[in-house]
Length: 107
Image (cartoon, rainbow, N blue to C red):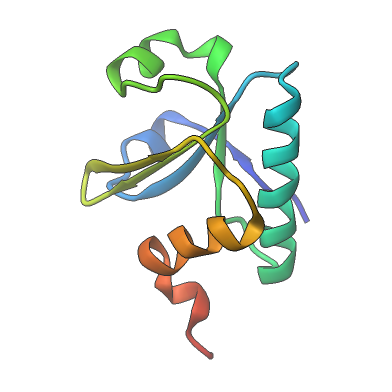
């Protein structure tokens, strides 16, 4: 199963997404990525999209992304949050409970 879907123009045009922004040689980014991958593997689905900040300077500037890693949360066609301090998996879950509550509904 492939996790962390590479961002596309179609996804950027959606009104809701969780976007992990990184640079390839950033150690903190790779630690943050491993947290996101762990969350996706638990849920057995793709939850986050990813973007290499180096390849999208206009996006970084337009969306006021100050540093990487960053979890950019877009909902209702507006940026609701920019998470720079991933801290822990539990911390990321606190954002998921708020912005992606459907993950926690028993099916």
